[in-house]
Amino acid sequence: MNRLLLSACALRFFDAFVLIAPFYTVMFAERGLTPAQIGIVLASWSMVGVVLEAPCGVLADRWSRRWILAIAQLLRVVGFMIWIAFPNFWGFLIGLMLWGMKSASLSGCFEALIYDELAALKRQGEYVTVYGRTQAARFSGVVAASLGAAVAAGLGYDALIWAGVAAGLAAAIAAMSIPQAPKVLAVGRWDFLGHLARGAKEAASRPDVPALLLFIAGMQAITYACSDYWQLFGLEVGLTKPGIALFVASLSAVGALAAWQAHRLRRLPLTGLCVLLAIAGACLTLAAATFQVWSIVLPLAFVALYWLVDTNADARFQHALNPETRATVASLKGFVMQCGTSVLMLTFGLVADSASYQAAFFGAGLAAMLLGGSYALWARGRG
Image (cartoon, helix red, strand yellow):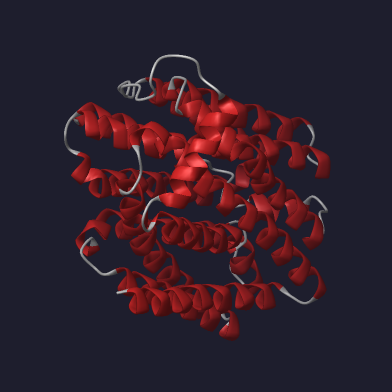
């Protein structure tokens, strides 16, 4: 148990310890990309996820999940090197596509590995706690990277990217140190499409799974579409580069605290979780409506509430799955999320290009309010 927790937390920490992360959309803008081009580049990350999320989940139900997680980190390392060699639209596009391959390989595979390892120890009831700890480790990595970036901003973008290369190698090593979860797929003839279809059937037929899948994927799509634009939020309201890095660090710090303490809400009804998401959306809408330096406190509230909801909703989702298709169904959730994120990221960039970043953030906040409110009404009626 201790080795699992330490290795998983180390993976998530180094996966997030990317010094260029607080600045890469600012870097794109300074290298001449328009808001629409930035939207296309960011959307390419999630579009790759649309294509690869489900296949990666099926593969994770059959092959070594540790190796998948390690290779995923090396793909992003290659992408960072491309950014250094070709700092233009096409270089950034290819680099983020490789980053998208990493993300698609990580999501469902990591969740399934943690849950099945806990199940082997007869401690699957602790998933929400362990998962929350790994999310806190991820946010700690972002905080550490953001603080480091604030200090090292004067060294230039290339130096920050090389630090990300080193972190990626460390994350690959951490992935290989995670205990090997037992294989749950029966030995015998294996059909890729058949297994994928079986996972989809499981997702559609199990009680609460379809609704939870759509709810989690929807709120993740809204949040991830905003996450790469927080840097530009800070820039637009007047923060300096060190200030932007500290703003990103603060977002991650509150996210880490929320994920760490999320298990305390594990008995909250689903209706309560949906209401919290609606409140989070209201915070983001108000931040966009005011759009002043002091408004940065409202995205902090949005992020904190989001992670309280996401961590608990994901635990309920995992408890409802069949072990033999866990990674596949989890990746189907990721597939739906990536579809939504692709559309929202591109839409965000186009709205910012035609109107303003302020209008784009306002729309994202309204979307979160609508999702949380509509699901709260559904959950209340179902209850």
